[in-house]
Image 1 (cartoon, one colour):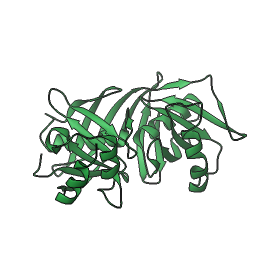
Image 2 (cartoon, rainbow, N blue to C red):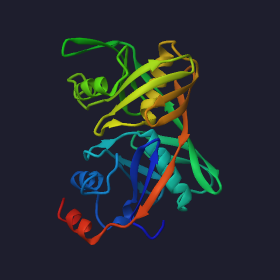
Image 3 (tube, rainbow, N blue to C red):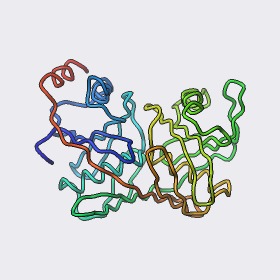
Length: 275
């Protein structure tokens, strides 16, 4: 670990702050996470990745609203880069532990730096009993799928931010999903390419999402719309996803560090005042 309190990185514009919980000097809580993620008075990010390497490589994923996520594809790629580059992980292939179970990962390097990460995301689970969702009288064509966290993939909609912003918060907080849900608008362009817009549970609109890409790929594959290897094109860029016949998913994509930093005495004072 560098002589810093945190490292900030992004995967296709989806940015996270990574911290070693044992080095912070305080316990992360929902109010502290909200302050750290605030883009005006905090560090600014789409979430916090809290790593614990005490006896295994465990990653705790915090949303910017202070809630916790079971999985994050971009987040886990960022965590893998951090763990590989700062001496926590041995070798280029290792397991990341999450509350949703282990994820096998392989890091790829260019000029000594990790620039891409491959994740074995496990099997997707598609709820084929629900194909529509009534949102204020508007009956949507949807696929509900879990890739370790829940997703609602919406088909047949105008692919615009305006439509995403209109539907995203309503679906996320729909009474059919008491624990809330991630939302994607999806539009297959070919059997190998799908466009997607992302609304993340606890974060809102994001430029890209790894688990959302996996969910979109699984939903399209389950409907027979795409082949096993598919590129998910989002606002922040493209992720490559492979879906097997049993809906096992492998995802690969880029990752980039932005900076390492220290928390100022002023910010630490505000964090200490929170519980």
